[in-house]
Image 1 (cartoon, chains in turn yellow, cyan):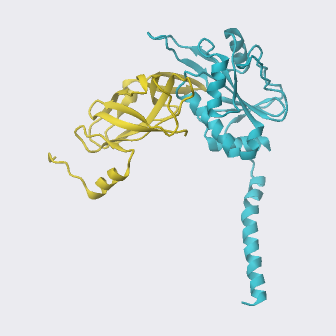
Image 2: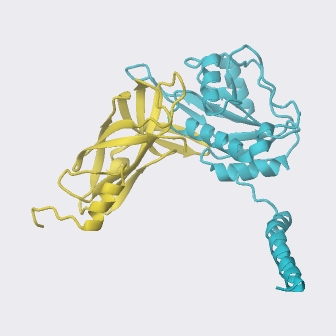
Image 3: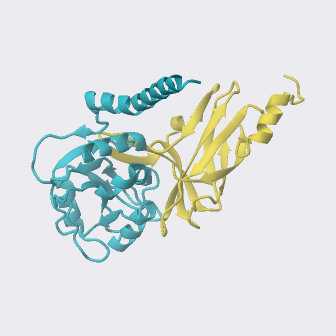
Length: 150
Length: 203
């Protein structure tokens, strides 16, 4: 592989056009985190959840290791599991945080989510939330999550 | 164009437009609605929310049989993922129902009385939809009502900061206009499917 990053014109245009898309540059051009969003929180709520999709088009498995945001005292990597209608929430296992080579890791309602513990301010509809997600290989990826009801 | 041609054209247009509107209704009337939720048989009235109250200290009747559908959901405010998702889905369904939304109520039963006061729950649910209501009460009363609805909940162990999660049955239940527990939806029900079921239940 050449040491010089090569960009095709459509790829450059796609990056320019896709505002919320963030490309991680931790040594590869093909690891991408897209569609970051957070559900607006009720007044006084202490918890929130942030979602995204990580696409790994490299040949190496990557893994989500941490996340931080000025909106949260702490972010826990949590997953929701529903069995027979009973919903349980627990810290995600290492296996559940893998972004497989050629695959994706989806954080979505009812599954994996960044659990924002100790909201420092409410998540307000239309006001984007800054969050940094850290992957073992791709490193830190700064995201601007849209705050919206979905 | 002769008047006869115009008349013929007009008739064709009229027939096409009319069938456009009539056909889906006719098909809808012929094909039974397939509920996304699980429809329950039986005619026992749904259990009363005995010993639970809203922020103003009032009990809420869920089986008054006043013709409205009452959706019941057991949850808590420290729930970041599933509870807000389900409440937002019900709010969206009410928006989609338009004028019929007035016949659909939601009552959330707080299963975390140690942290959530009735007043906090009122504010929490109203954030999703100003018509939503909430009740909670002493632990024993909450447990009794939950049990009457077949709802399981269990407080997890607190971490170093005293935070804990609550495992709970996150299904959405529907009490019909006769006050009978009629339908149960899974927590991940879509707004589209829920709206269709609600519209059918409202007749």
